[in-house]
Length: 503
Image (cartoon, rainbow, N blue to C red):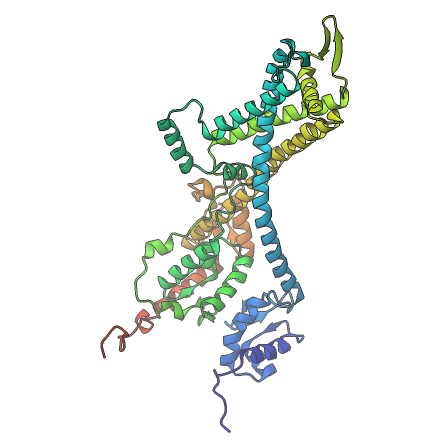
């Protein structure tokens, strides 16, 4: 029976044998160590170790002689398989569905509550104003005027509320047909009201939701303009990730884009992606060198006037809710007073509350004070606090998240400047021209330079000039490797078959 081909193998079986070997006591592994422990061919080990490193958060090391070593400081705990990853994936799926459903219901509730209470409070104030005239004008049952007493209050409430809704949403009463057409067109250009309210409260999501795709495009463009070779410092400049995070991400890219970690003759680590060199069109070098920046998050997509309008509407609800709650506690149902002219409602600041209690009793409420305390007091008051509280907390979190985004964008500028001049880098000359790359903390640049120096053995002189000899060595070696690569060896060859050609 013939031996199977070296590259014709069962991936799962090879990975299981490698994992059993990696469970041993050795801290660092070379390809030769794994070949001795498993009996597997080096070609299979080299093909599967990048995927294992990605799944188990492995780290790549290079010895002084240039040997490549694998290590797993966090142990062999898979990030994709097992009970923990399964439950996290299930939780993400369920939570996303619940959040999506909750957002729809919450949008409707916020819109109805915010403007519903606003219209109701304004309508009650107008009803109380005109109702007082109706009562003083002889709203007794003997006159038989159905617009005078309790029925009159109900008629005023219904018609005033209906008129306000028509004025707000449709503007039908006092506008020409041309004005209505222009307003309807303007509304189509703006966000719908429910989305505008939700944007004010919860924002508009993550503007960098597609960042993984953006990063991969920039990565592939860089690879294709640099002969398939990239170093870890260069990847840090593209992604803005810190060295530890960049190591983890590029290990994943080795699997996704069929790359491999390589060591130069003098022992510098670089990553080679020959499959990405098979391209039928050229890539612009300047475009590939312009690394993308993450977008800062905005408070909302509304203009300032609309956000201020929402706040003022909520302030009205907050004031009215507080008013009704305090009167429900302090006045209760004691809204009738005896005057020289006869029985009347309490006046002054309590008149609106007194008249609302009167209307509620006319509509059949047995405990109008309790009803008003909860419906017109506690409910709108709690909503108003929530309507102010959520944007306030979100604004604080937004500021912190934007600072993190600015730091990440700044690292791209900083790492690129270090790579351009690793031996004589002066962090005081780094230019941060736009807001997206300019953190608020003045010491941010110096902090990131020190972190980079700790990772790459950088040194600073008495004059404040940094020397990153390790980075200089890596970049010099990478340029020598690139000089030795002929892109024509990887370019598509002459077409020998085309489905469009006639046979």
